[in-house]
Image 1 (cartoon, rainbow, N blue to C red):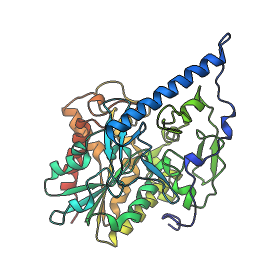
Image 2: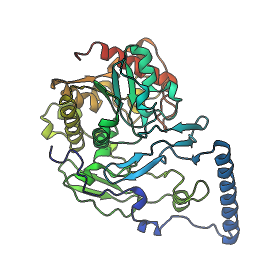
Image 3: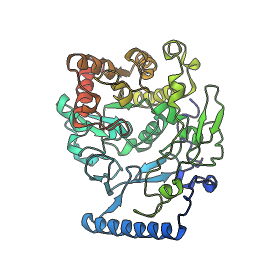
Image 4: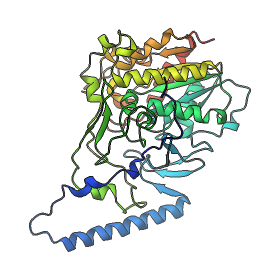
Length: 412
């Protein structure tokens, strides 16, 4: 537990500051007979048109225009990145119309903390991209849907895009005094969180490498997978660059350098999860668990201790991720998904139920029972397999499951 919480003195590495030495081999070749001057003129023309489009959008919306939902954030020496407070950004999603996203004074996609008042009990919602809900209007996101289904409680959404378990915990503790006064925490756990705890990933940099015992390895290319194995050893697995990657990563077509999201063929740590026997491992003491699950468990224990000292009850619930939800729906299951009795987080996080002030909410079990009686395609709940954001039906399904499970929990 010594290195669970941030040590403010140690700097983090943000993706924008990583070495670009790996850019020497772009994989881009000219076809025979192609004139470089023609291609350069074409790219220059596209760049000008892109900048003109951005200028028009800036004038229309009177705000900065962001073409990736990863960009309304600033590098942080202690959290990888943090959302920028009191900003408005136009986000263009792969599916659906553009959406103007407003961050409140704490950088959250939520109403201002002082708008919640003190008359109704408050639950702070912690999580990452899926529970954050950029893809839906604020009036339709998970917090508002939970308020509809519980009626006697308000929910403040403090989720941050792409965060790992450690980043969620560290950021909550750092901002605790600024949040509305609350007596409950609802931690929405995503299956991606443990692998983010042991990798340098999208949200700046894992706090393991910032605050843990491991010295960061040099990253030759931003697509390299840097991870710690079950023995605590740190590795780097190089990843080859895709075609035209220098253009897509350093494009000035829209909103300046680094404006476009990095679409790289990341080696994925979740492949390791697919190869493990979680049913057997989860029955062992936590010290024998796979390294990334052991770390997530310890971070959640640290959060539970922090909450207990402040008389706050902690709920930990599974986010209904595309990979696993598709196993219960009509159609072809995802090859990356797990059957109900093999979903790792159900097996590991249920062990937290032995703690005094924690309840694990098994939303997958509740959702699977609902879908047995109401067969549906996964597309009803999730935007697409590539962008696993919730539709309104998806948010409603999750909120119904959470409200039902919270109502029968042993929470005082």
